[in-house]
Length: 285
Image 1: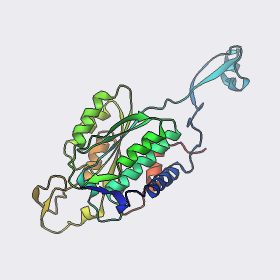
Image 2 (image 1 turned 90 degrees about the vertical axis):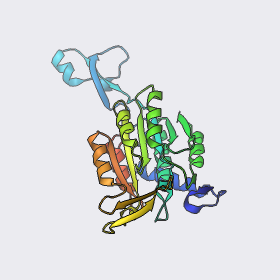
Image 3 (image 1 turned 120 degrees about the horizontal axis):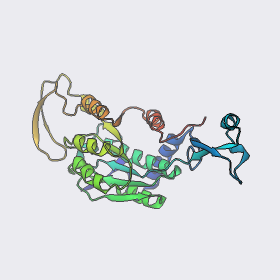
Image 4 (image 1 turned 135 degrees about the vertical axis):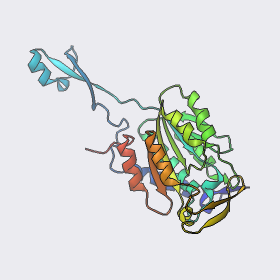
């Protein structure tokens, strides 16, 4: 059976889109509104003046030193394709909060996608559960809205294939890409696949955490079941079933930028600063 995030009426999609657009506006707050962020700001070289060159581009220091007019050349930063990989498995939907890890991930994925469009960066999406959701990077807002709508539904028994999906994505990327993964990283195979991908592409890991995942501390032995498979397990509270600190350290050791997002805490400012630090958003000078 399919469920809708936020317990929303299936026909009431307007509030969902409003929430995503509000998040996109929050992420872009205080950044350069130019479609080409950083246009004309990346110096490449100085070369001899040619007829038609603007006087404003004259490199006066080099001109004075060489006793010949030189002009500065700038390069418009290339907008690389962006892939948003979102974990659609059951563990992402289990929640102790109003918004589950999955619901929050869908909103963040949509907000980032709309922000990337403002930078004229094509955005694609890959579902990392059992469902077949692959949309190649596009600059079409309509296509992005379509996959956002598709992600509003989820199954409570969907298994994770994060590692498998990331490994399958890597050979299909013909040019250097930015891959943003939103997951709780419960799939043991995910780490090795992400490390392999990071060897050739820029990777970002947004790790989702529900506060209930900490409740077992000091509880002794625990009987539980996997959300995806239903398989029973027994563990000790000293060994966290999902060790967020370990995952974060392993990602950073692999050179993969990592941000922990907790569903019960404010995250927008932290996420905006994180994206700005990576150059995905450019603040006003």
